[in-house]
Length: 308
Length: 145
Image 1 (cartoon, rainbow over the protein chains, first blue to last red):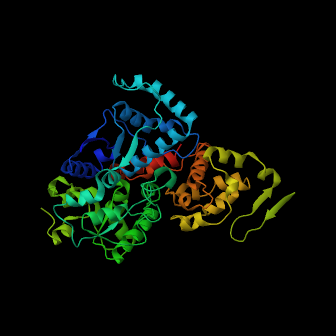
Image 2: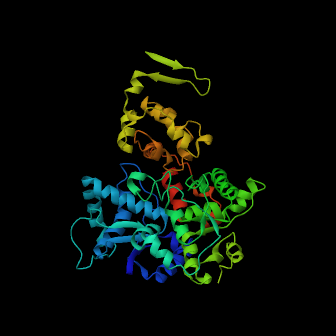
Image 3: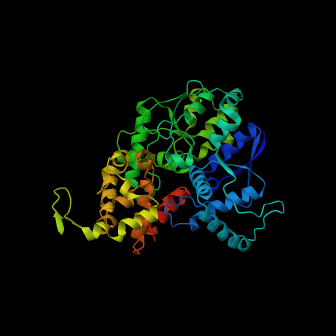
């Protein structure tokens, strides 16, 4: 498989380190090394919805242009927010010629200020959305294939009941993201099936966890997260599985606050999909960052003798 | 002609041809890239919205107020500051309107008045150190000038 261009984003390098760690470990096992496109900068985290906010596109397009300049056609990313920003920036660059010219003009001014020189092989042409942005799950589903993935599983997660939680920005807005059906997605359930785990069906799998409201309206986010977690529990889940670092923080790191607001709530572990993949592929548990979780996820794995 | 609407559920709203034909609706159209007049008031956005139960004006009502040029009422509501930008409304709108973009445009217009709806004094330091970056960027980008 070789190597694939990878954009980790800021969050994965400190606050959600286990997502980056576990992803790299799994990619190595699969023979597709995740190689960071250097130098990289923040993608901006929040995509601009307003038509007037053109400057906010400079950050994501800078990354995409550098990826293209490095001769790559695919860019894999893990953080759902990075994925959403990069994919939507790409969409706008492809659809809007005037915007495309403006953003490229800003980048042209910006590059010398950052001591960035495109490699000699790089095209001098404007960046017009040539790079394909793939979520790591998408890469697993479309480039490697879930069937091929299933064959590489060393430790089938038989009997592990996992409730997949999609969140919002991985799937929506549909027109610009087109990863899966936002109302009835299958990508996470099929992923779990490839690992022989048992995906739990429950109605809150794509309802918002509150996103940044956990900072500005934290009671609201606690309410939303409680509904999601309680629903998963009610439908028999032993743990949840997420992709987005902010969802993980809202659903997992804040379970103390949720328990305080909703007496009777019992804590439930939340995995990153890459950690479950790591366990299934036979990666050593110490490389998967479980110690960074507030709600210990090892007991659920130990129950089924999955932990190495 | 000026009509007063005495609404048992909410405050009095002053409708006028002048407000309806004024610049507000068009400016929201332009800023959001959406066509507010496309909204048929079906209510799908409001029913899918995870924060609807905490809002003073529902998303579909916000669309209606914008159509009627009621700038003051819209920009002074609580709704736009507790919108989670989850895009459920956009996904479900049968007319293909990006309602989340309209909300973003309204926030931008409100912030142009120079008033912050969030500040660093409102985050506990422990949370600021722990919350993933999109959480911080989200509140500062959408709720502060």
